Structures are given as C-alpha cells and as structure tokens.
Image 1 (cartoon, rainbow, N blue to C red):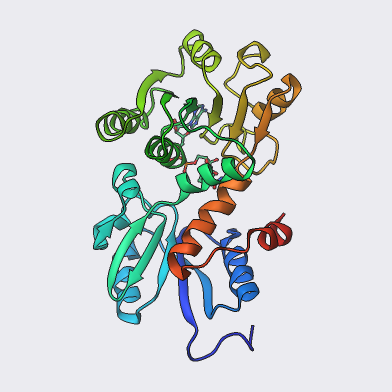
Image 2 (image 1 turned 120 degrees about the vertical axis):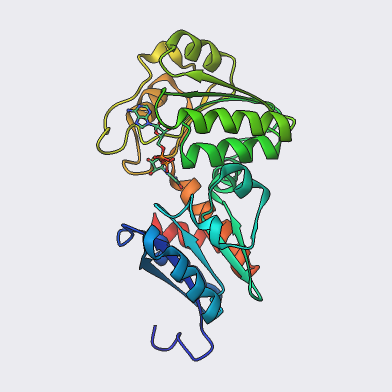
Length: 287
Ligand code: NAD
C-alpha cells in the first residue's frame, strides 16, 4: 500500500452507516492494484445528518466518485447535479461520478443483477419474470430488467410500507418502457403460483432467507417450482437460502446474490475508471 499511494492517487469513497463490514473496499482496491490504477477506495461512516457536508467535501476535494449505501441511497440525489435514467426511476443512487465538478448519480444494482445472469449464461430478454420485493434491490432489478428488454414482470410484495414504492415502479415501467409490469399482494399465494408457472425466471429480492429470517421462505412448498425454472436470490450470506435449497432439490438452475454484488461493483468501477474490472481476479480473491 505504501508503494501504491502517491501524491497523485485519487480517492473513491463509500458513504453509509453501518459500513465497516463492507467487502467493497477490498474488491475495488484489489482491482485497482491488479490493473495498476492510481486510485484508493475508502469507507466513511456517514449517515443522513452529515451527508450534505460530505458531498460538499467531495466537490471541494475533487474526489473522483463514491459508492453510496444505506441510509443515504434514497436521499443523496438532493445534493447531486444529474441522475441516470435508472437512478431517476428507482429514486435511489449507489454510485456517484464526479466529472470536472458535475456530480452524477447512478444506480448499478440492477445492472449488476442483469450482468450476473449474463455471466451465468442466462438470457431473460423478451421473457417473463416473477419477482418478490419492492425495496432498493428489488426496484433496481425491476427497472433495469424493463429497460434492458424483459417482456413482462409480475411483482409481488407484502402490503407493508414498501407497497407504495412498487405501485410507483409499476407505473414508471409501464409508462416509460416496453415492458408490462403488474403488482400483486404476496398474501395471494394462488396468484404467486400461477405467475411463477408462466415465468422463465423467479427472483427473491427481499431479505427473506437472510438473518434474522435465515432458513425461511414465503414459498410454501416445491409445487410452486419446476425443473426448467431459473431461481435467483439477492441474498449471498448465507450462500444458499431456504429458497435456493428448495429450488436445487427440484432441479432448477439457481444463482445467489454474489454475482449481483460483484457486477454492481464492476459497473461502478467502469464508471469511475473507464476500465473493465478484472472479474476473474476479483472472484478469486473474494470467493
Ligand atoms: P429494503 O429494506 O429496501 O427492502 C426490503 C424488502 O423486503 C421489501 O420489499 C419488504 O417488503 C420485504 N420484506 C421484509 N420482510 C419481509 C418478510 N418477512 N416477508 C416478505 N417480504 C419481506 O432492502 P433492500 O436494500 O432492497 O435489500 C433486500 C435484500 O437484498 C437484503 O438481503 C440485501 O442484503 C440484499 N441486497 C443484495 C445486493 C447484492 O448485490 N446482492 C444488493 C442490495 C441488496
């Protein structure tokens, strides 16, 4: 590290709280070192109350960019100059790029999900997806899938505080893309079964299956799945959620949240450096 940091080294930040557990600093610094790029990636424990000052500081210091995580993802747009189409539709930013003082907010979680599928040889363009979730991860996936050309998306969520967000996502997708989106209550399990039966892919985009809901799934039994269905989860710890375990038993092709995490990072890396992340190297050191 002492050899790598010079007077020219540029800073990339990560602003969130809590954040000390994040694997992003390791992922990006490994990639910078591998490609000999003169950047350093550091995490800063910043919450909503210090967010405006932090962004002002980034501007003043001409910082190249930053990742953004909770609780700042849905607030930080107020302090930026521009938003990508996906960030605008998601109402959420996870990556900031500073181009000569113009700060643009992007969301790369959905790109990460779609790239992860592609990397696994799965093509969902022109096909139907059923997805559970209406939070940050779910919205990013739904918007990117619609922008990329998925034909139909059936969204299910509990009637909790996120349901309204899903209603807005459905409206935006139907108005601004060629994809047809429909929202259903997750309590309607007969409808969920029916929609999964006519889908090419089923995705969990909630924290179900992860602590404190580890070992649980809202899918009542194996009759909801079939062998030629692709089943994905945004959760990567544990690597195999109860949903993925059930799907594997049925014989489905499955994918956990690790590729999404990796490729959302790769998309941010490309935005800051204009270079492709050395994916195989990063997979090796992080895997
Ligand atoms: P969020 O808080 O924005 O959304 C939570 C979602 O979970 C909502 O849709 C909510 O209705 C639903 N939910 C909560 N409890 C539920 C329950 N008991 N039954 C059914 N639904 C329930 O969260 P988020 O930021 O969207 O994160 C969701 C998950 O995605 C987390 O596990 C997070 O770690 C993961 N994630 C993964 C990646 C990745 O790169 N793989 C990226 C972002 C988030």
